[in-house]
Length: 204
Image (cartoon, rainbow, N blue to C red; front, side, top):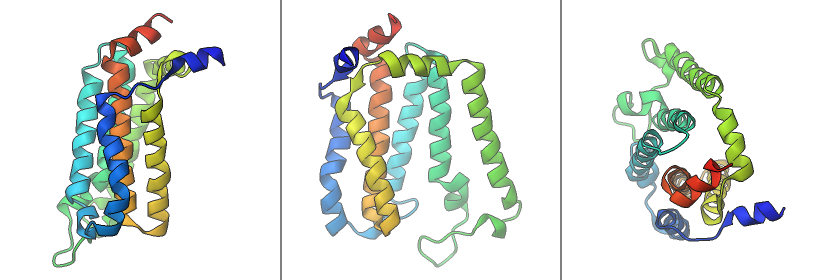
């Protein structure tokens, strides 16, 4: 317990500014943000893709535990493909109907989308296992510093994102989802580049 308390990091880093800002803006967005900004291919959705691409780059340029972070890069790709529905929401909109897209069953060879997506996720999981990245995950789980605010932001994004989806509030869902991605970026960035975080785990 004493070691766990020592790992708690209450410092507020610059990468924590944006997730906090989105949390603070969530309620105003629920009241006044036009729902069109939460549609597929909208401002918020595109910003989420930028965050995921940025996180992907951070994973590729990490200073330590490269294979583990490459596994996280695959996770970023999976989340990116999820956001664009494997390209369906980009290439197959229904003409004349806002925020509506053809389903895969209505698209030629569309039935291949889910098997290919599933194969990519399976391949990513195999890479994680073959490279023994799970050992690094255990090391981080037991010894890594914990950026308290960013972990709180992450769980906040998960909880209210699911809540927004369940009650059909697009503003709450998309703002919370964006908060989740920003917190994920912050956590990965700190562990990949911050000297104190790297040294804490490397010496274990």
